[in-house]
Length: 478
Image (cartoon, rainbow, N blue to C red):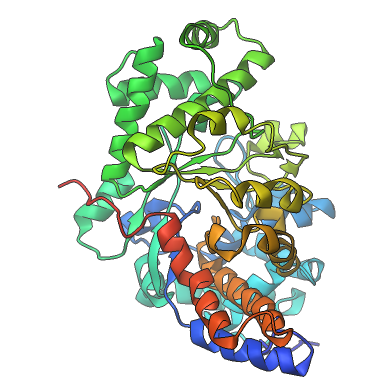
């Protein structure tokens, strides 16, 4: 028996009537604001070519590690879900993969994935019944039919979603051809890039040697010398800025920073490129490079984002077969107070520096991150991230950081997603949760409602534009 799919207008609002009424009013004032997505992992090729997606599995299931990690935890193999192996090939029939997903859709009850998917199923595709085994083929066929129409091509959806800006993330050795193609196409959608140097900064990255070689070739620098390596970063950062970038992103295992004497930097670098480095050397090099990136950000104005604390590819067998980003990244304890001190001792009071801190370790919210951001002018707190990008996670973040750091040491919301179609749902969830939090402060007479309305706008739109320096974006190269 099919079940109806309904999106309740008061979803995620407080159950208490007075607060719910305030939340409704606040939400109505920000619901239709443009979406600013300053950090994420959408594929720029979608917007460069504007080619239609072929089917629901390719678009919604196979790229989304939130979905297949849950299914895998219940014994569903990844190769049956359309997930490509290391060769880039999936032998699964897309329709059968979708049926398998639909028959397990009940597993997502109570999760943010269920909120996001139901939102796009109802709002974008117009479904009125829930996804399950009995409706799987109906969903698959109807989604595929829609994707074949011009109104569901990538650029049309970008405009339909009211996206003002979307930032993708590219590696330091990426030639940025897709962003160049977007620019030359004449399309007015604002898609910019973000500088992610991890593959040439982390000696333990699986692609380090090959990426370093490509990095040097693109920059026309000798990256086997310390000075040539730093010069290559400066050149590539300039290339990224010419493609619209206003930010860098660093996904290190820890938040450790270092500030070594020049001679020690050179010796360390020689060990790294010479192949004689230890695991301790690798961590020290990553730490030093965060400080070097901060120095370059002072020079060129790019905002730093630090995303530490994930033990990546925890499932070795899965990693060996399917590669990275397959749902086996696990949060771990992360220190910020001691880890960031070398960088902050050198640059913490520089007015030109802006660092946005993220965490997967919620225990650090009140103890470390809020006090740090509530003191250092260069630090801001990114929103609840990854495993905590959920209604409960967003509430905990607000409750544990606002009293010390305040709202204006935050950066609004970013969706940080590969799942392009989920972007409106994610931003809508954030706006609803923030309005619910503000409604409580109004009901408790801790804020005037007019102040809450201003904050709702800031959290949805204003803070993110300032934090990522989007109004000061450099023009793209001719």
